[in-house]
Image 1 (cartoon, rainbow over the protein chains, first blue to last red):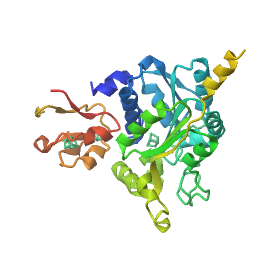
Image 2 (spheres, helix red, strand yellow):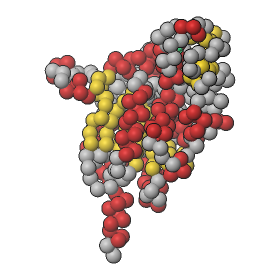
Image 3 (tube, rainbow over the protein chains, first blue to last red):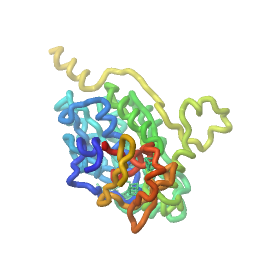
Image 4 (cartoon, chains in turn yellow, cyan):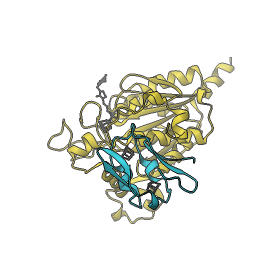
Length: 269
Length: 66
Ligand SMILES: Cc1ncc(C[n+]2csc(CCOP(=O)(O)OP(=O)(O)O)c2C)c(N)n1
Ligand code: SF4
Ligand code: SF4
Ligand code: SF4
């Protein structure tokens, strides 16, 4: 059944997956798997770790080493896994709630340490799994079950957060530009250090319905309209930059990786 | 289903959730939704661009080998 990538890297007996009709998660997940395939990584040397949420269910469908952990703690588990076995390629799949609300603390410290983990946030602007509560990335004014009159919180720019905390590869893409996701995940995995990739994706069931965003396909097209590539953005005059979300590779740095640093310390005795 | 030049458009009906994303992104109106599932109603217009496969969240439509 179905195509090469699915056949090779998915636990096909578990399909169809539980995600709602038109949920962007399935699109993002295949783009990630394609990156792993392009890099020719040994399937048994990849470990994918997730927290809790609709997006975090992804690990259940993948045929790598996979760990489905507790809410917000994927990065804590992933840190342990990377430390115990530094040759593994460790990839974290997390949601905006999982990563930035309950898991925000783990995020900043993993970034600060520059541990070689590729963190991929499926940002659908809402808590999907629990019924549409607003998250740290729900745009100000948008609605959720817990914000029936509109969210009054300022929303987090997760890429700025990761960059400030010390990540050495930071990028953003959307479920509209599927091939950009693949390219960024490849770069993120190749980076020897903490990589942070934010993917704007769609939850038609809650975020879409509560905010009257239209059907699944329309929501995907809107992501194209509200975003702009970083190169084009840099050429825009200041007054035209407002309300645009920047996509592309946003930040790169070179800094010693955490497990290598630890190794160096141990070898010095 | 009709075999095309080099690839074949394959639908896995049991995986399709009828979301309509493939229909909306197909540039040639090859597809439509019928009874909650995708239907290939004009295979002759298909240009094998793969956009349906690229964004199908359920891996239910793809261009396969002959
Ligand atoms: C300790 C703990 N607190 C709260 C919950 C309930 N809970 C499950 S998933 C979730 C939020 C998920 O949102 P997000 O990470 O954005 O993922 P999505 O479902 O949108 O993909 C919450 C609050 C939980 N499982 N565990
Ligand atoms: S609730 Fe939203 S995020 Fe969860 S599976 Fe459904 S569409 Fe996807
Ligand atoms: S995109 Fe996939 S799941 Fe959605 S209607 Fe088309 S074939 Fe079915
Ligand atoms: S391959 Fe392209 S033209 Fe053919 S059905 Fe898919 S989207 Fe339409």
